[in-house]
Image (cartoon, rainbow, N blue to C red):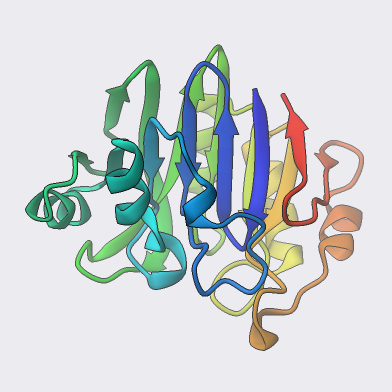
Length: 218
């Protein structure tokens, strides 16, 4: 499985299927991919409907025929626009085209969905945890125990979500072997230090610092 950080919180996951998470590309000064250059997607998963996460989700689904997976209210809005969507809620799992997408707790606000969520994407025998926007929460311990993600993508901006110090504690709660910092450096008020996160996480977890457009394999 190949995972590319597209900047901010946006990911592209490529395996037997192609999955986008929180594809905020248009208007994202750090985006490494343009919507017009996307020619394939099977699933688009969204943590919440703030503009820097919902982003270009609807347009990508229209362009590619992908299915949107999101909180029920967000999916309902997509369906009203004639977009294929699976609306689930926290604790639920949608299976689409061989990809299992589960919504897990996150501590953050949202618009029409009311609350935000984290995502577990399972495909090809691998499991990816995308925390969305969240504060530190003890639910992360359960997420680690139940879903056993191979990798975690954690926000570290310290303004809308966790600081590097809190994200380092999240790594401990999750018990995850590898983590990647996201949601920092996009705009002037969310500058943060991925190097600080890496240092605080310590040797128990491999922290991989990516630049937008860079990828890793799991």
